[in-house]
Length: 250
Image 1 (tube, helix red, strand yellow):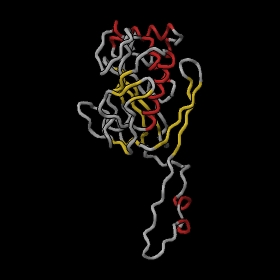
Image 2: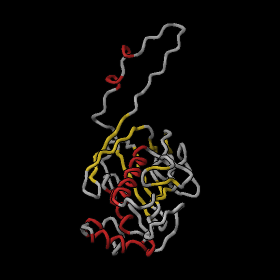
Image 3: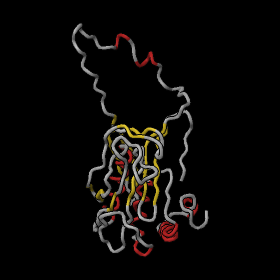
Image 4: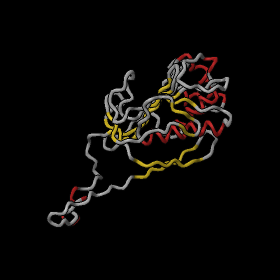
C-alpha cells in the first residue's frame, strides 16, 4: 500500500516490510522542498523585543525547548478504539536507505508483547509507538502467546547499518513471525509456511495498518496465499487486500 502526499507540506509516513523471517517496519518524516503558503513569516516568529535581555559579562541561559507531545486515535482489530501517546524527541532525516536519525529515542529491551533481540534499537518516536502498540494488541487478543521477537531498528544517529540496506533513518524495524506451536523465538528465525501462526501474524499486520501510517508491506510470496486467505476469512474484502498483497497475481 503506497501513501502519497502533496508536495507543499511535511509528510509523515511509515513502511512495513515482511520477509521470510521478519517483518520490516519504518516510520518518520520526509521534508518537501515546496514553500508552505501557511507557514508563519520570520517576523512573526521572532522580534528583537522577544530576545532575552542579557547583562554585560553574564552568560545567558539556554532557552529550553519544550518537547512536543503527540496523540493518535486508532481502531484496533478487536474493534475498540485506543489513544496512542508519545513525545516527539527524534526526527528522521532523508530516506530509509540514505538518511540519518536525529535524537536518542530507543525501543526498550522488553515491553508488553515483545522482546528486542536486535542489537540496534534507535528509531523515531512514531516507529517505537507503533511497534509497542501492535505488540500489545496481539498480547491482548492472545493472552497466552509468547512475546514477539523484535530485530534491528537503527543505530544511534542512524546511517549505514551492516548488513542492512535500509535501517538508516529510524523508520525500519524487523519483526519476527509468530510460531504456531506457541514457542518463543529468541532470534529472528526462518520458518516454513506450516510453522507460521497466521492468525497472530495477521493481527500484528492489521494493528499496524490501523495506524493509517503504513506505506508498504512486503511478505515473502511463500506465505502470501495463506495470509490472503485468512484475511478474507475474517472479513477483509478482496479489493482491499489485492493492492497490499502480490497474491493472487498483482
